[in-house]
Length: 76
Image (cartoon, rainbow, N blue to C red; front, side, top):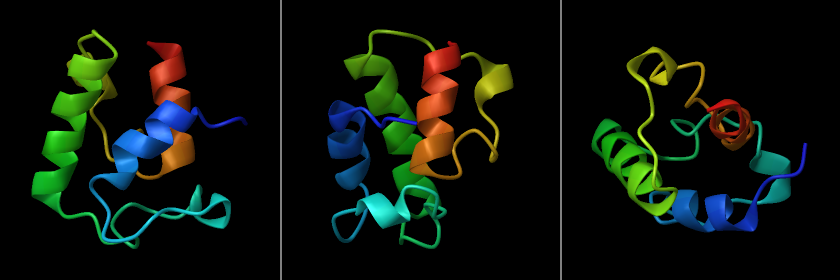
């Protein structure tokens, strides 16, 4: 799965270090994202992509990693 560069840039703002391609499957928690950053990420995504993420999509599984997030955004 190709990850959108724009999405990588957005997510990287909420991680303590830049994410590498090898880490696209790694959980955001393991990469150092805390719960407050997760909430801010969702708000940013909605603003930048000009969308509302439906409540049923706001699950740990959908926001667990960069690949999972890309898949979720593609399905909205």
